[in-house]
Image: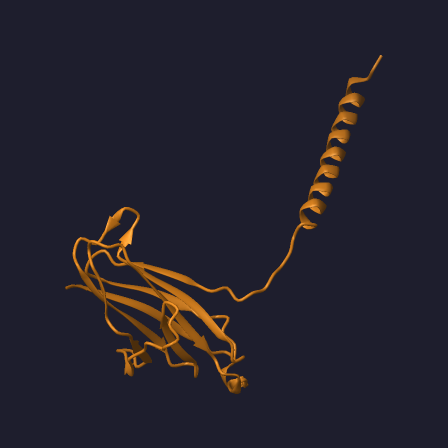
Length: 183
């Protein structure tokens, strides 16, 4: 006859060994499908101007390097979202506010234009004593009876001549503001 204690002990050992074997196979299977990749991802920002207010979106520029390459960020401003459209004619202005940590060059283009539309650049100090640049663009209009979208491109360039340890640990931050008013 079969000894019940030996049979139960043998089954427990068998089950534990099968579980360990399954875990080892699954661990190797999952690890063989891992990969890494690097790339310069562009940030897409969308603003929906449906009423009078100020909207903002921060842009963290962690990947900007002094390589002389253009980093392009897409900004879309629309007077509709889903099935809702602005009920009044609106006027808006896009403003870019940046820190002054790095000698970075900024350009803003509307749609596929080749003309930089920045109309003015000013420097100001906030209540904490930090300095900022403020870039203004021309005001644009949306009519309430037509769905419209304005496509902007923010081009950021960190010239290669600034490859030095002086700029190594500094970060640049930018904020896009959309200030809309009723016409």
